[in-house]
Length: 442
Image (cartoon, rainbow, N blue to C red; front, side, top):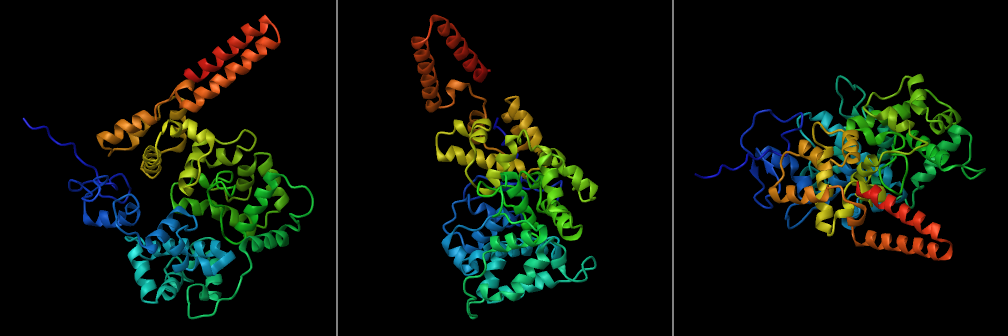
């Protein structure tokens, strides 16, 4: 009797737009890591999957699309040249915002389609990229008779900048030289709005972060995730599950400053006191998103490490120590294991039914693997075995050799104290060590 093969699930089977019933999924013939139920689903995923598959070449258009979806500036040198980031100089952030807006308005103009790298590449190679961007932003709908540039908060400013600076993408036009750095533009906007100068007086890190948000919001832009810039977690952008929800958060702040002219001092004091949600609610702009109120109110005691996990994975940046320990990265011995674990968390975060605080609770209870099993439906036997080991809660002494070394150092320090002082200290030191080891072993 032959053993029946387990049914494979399409990568998009748990997304809202995917049909409930679909043909049996087939694995990618190249890497066997993911499965699709149709050629449409495979094409839909290719621009993302190409980075994990055994693809011989990755185009600069695919690097650009990844940067757009990850909300980070592209790092590939040729991509930065091909798509105008080198020419844009200090205004690269605005150009990235333009491309992000293009992705959004294209989806609104074509509800059943998503922007693909092949389209971007064709537009660039045929010299129609500028015209296609203008056509997408200028497209009129019943809801937006003045053009889709009005549907994305702040992109009226971004699109207006692009119309004045098409030389960034048109190599036949002379470069405008070194444009005014965008951070300086935000600083000037903040100073004009608040009447305050960041260079004068003593500013706390919280006040500087509030000023940066205000300056960006006045231009319709938001903080980006990552270690180089604060605010993505602190101001609640991290709770968004989709780009549309992220825009809701941004809209709350841009409306607060641009339309309602909330005084900066009022805003900063509300944030410092943990009363930012109350302020947004008073101005009737508080976004109705799960966990938003809790996140923007956690000023004094800090945020759960799950939000820093999401931030680090979204920005593809270095994870902070708390995340490394809490979510199993400390158990990884190789880059392959770290990549597998990171990909698993990324897949969870875009899956239907995922809740960041449920993952946090699972982490606290030492049940990350159980929670992952409830979210991730399509894992190979090898992946399940590896992830179960990596997500397992370890004892203090079994994290890795470096923790064992640290424990030895701790013991030596305590022993030295014993020698220097008295026998009483021996018992105190031993008790402290036992308590510490017991705490991390439970």
